[in-house]
Length: 416
Ligand code: UD1
Image 1 (cartoon, rainbow, N blue to C red):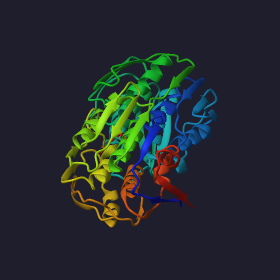
Image 2: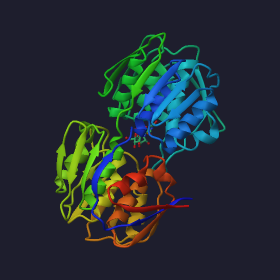
Image 3: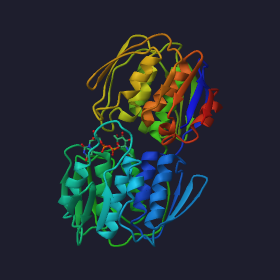
């Protein structure tokens, strides 16, 4: 078990280069199964979640080479169609591999996915869509086996714009017969990135990034090189770090368009923000103002930034109300924040945060990736030293987190 010791109460200043997107890398790595040849990926973050996914790719039979953010995957020799259970349990997005394996081999076996404990996280929408594509699904002792002779395009209407289900449908139908449409598709930028990657490989996907996507099946795909988009959640986290520490922070290698809801909230909180082509600069006021936030599917406010904003608002002037509409169990971090003096009341999906001037230090524990990042933000604002345990959760999604924080003046140490 690793921990962070953070000595807070320093105003953070300087420039942070944002890494490649975790949530775009995972489906894109999975998509490399489809071309049966080499994919060269640039800007892949070196974090636990990409390491696990690449580990699974190797166990399936792929050849993987890694160096400085570049990952080369050759999937020619993949023969296995069962996702190893032990690694499947480590993170939820391994379910994305199912769509890609199905797309290529017309069969896949996997167990229920793991991941952060932020809600029930069922996969019913994925399975319903697979059935609509003519895939036979059997569930036995926790294993799900999907099989068919061929995948035939269909019109799929999602009950909810699930990111994972949208990605899985795309992956399963790129090589299908005929045309597939997805109505009420998720519109997240990571889905657009996946479609751009696949189109560069020879797929025919239109409308990714909107709520209606058309996939026209093709027979063959080719080698591809691709630069993964920047991580908009890491970017939003560093903007909150600047905001909470009365800092002056520039984030580089970002797409400001992807950050619109976060930037609007930070402006409402009193931050001065300047956007340029690939950078955003934030100058925070001495004391932030309270705001209300409702998480929504993209282009709404992202659930993945709810906790880092929650921590930031715990020291704002006034009362903030957060409504978490995506995951039902995403307030675990607030009980840890309360140990640091935060005044937060939770009622179902609503959090009422009465801002106080200063949090105090304490010994706290991360319970999920973004909730863990929220505790880091809280710790950076307190006088004295805060110990955060179970930071493995944080390391799943933030590349070189301590190094980046130290570069802007944070006093942070990793212990084991
Ligand atoms: C992805 C992101 C995650 C982000 C989330 C929402 C990755 C690797 N992860 O997760 O960081 O927080 O989008 O933006 O990209 N649901 C069902 N049935 C299903 C599928 C989903 O009920 O079959 C529900 C979920 O329980 C949840 C909601 O739909 O309440 C959103 O889930 P989804 O969009 O699928 O999120 P993920 O793809 O798991």
